[in-house]
Length: 184
Image (tube, rainbow, N blue to C red; front, side, top):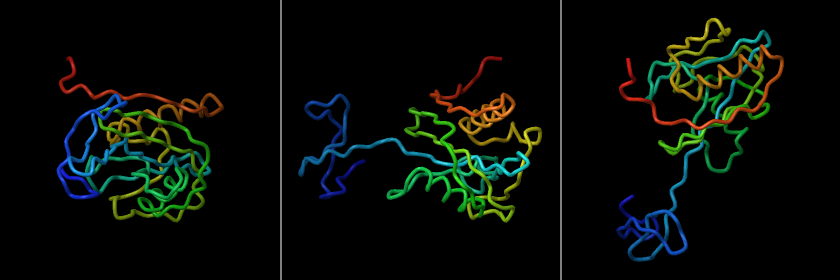
């Protein structure tokens, strides 16, 4: 941030009194501009036979890779509403949103990933503008090496493990930056 959205004056990064973090503070009107993590909200759309609906991304980041339908939460909506909206936008699919299933904190990119269990209401789905294609997958058919995001991969691994165990539980995790040059 370089300029105050309230008055247009330059901002500077400094710690306000009684705070513990540097913030962007306007040099003229002294407004403190807080920047908070982005919420990524989505669904695990399951069909009656246990298959999961995935979307192949038509946008960056990770163009061409597969993911669960998810995206940035909008102001004025609840997290279940965001999950249903993202599923409709990315897969033209209608779902009934169930319980929150996983939450991944990704502090190194200032995001929190929330994924809900969801029941796919019908088989009338098609790619939205952000998807190249959409398809239902069994566990054996999931393109594991072509999944776009670690939070999605971990969620699907937990989902299938819970399914085999006969009950679903909430999963919480913190993701660290990926290794740039992993050891061989």
